[in-house]
Length: 134
Image 1 (cartoon, rainbow, N blue to C red):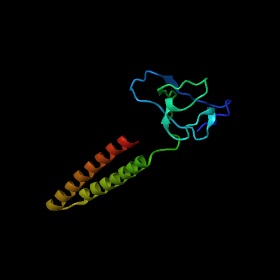
Image 2 (cartoon, rainbow, N blue to C red; image 1 turned 30 degrees about the horizontal axis):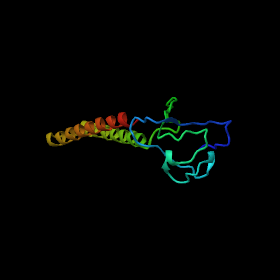
Image 3 (tube, rainbow, N blue to C red; image 1 turned 90 degrees about the horizontal axis):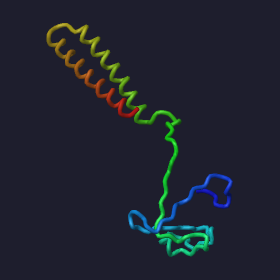
């Protein structure tokens, strides 16, 4: 909220229009009574009393402009969690590969190979999650 009494700082204003593109009236609220308006609660703007320097238009519009800046706070919680999961799945894959190398016997090698395949799929899914969240 901007202090209306301090015009040396940043200010923004609405553009008035009697021919609004959507046909909906503007609503106005001025709980502090500034600008000599008595609309303390939300009311249709054209029903509020304004001094002669203000136009009680039926509609208003605005636009925002500027530059989007990257989040200076750091990575999101989802990104941090995705990276942690990727690290965990890579560690599990390394362990599965070691077990496959040490496996002796056809049945043990088959189980170990299946575990490696599953671990590779988990790493791939975790990598996709990192790309989506970071």
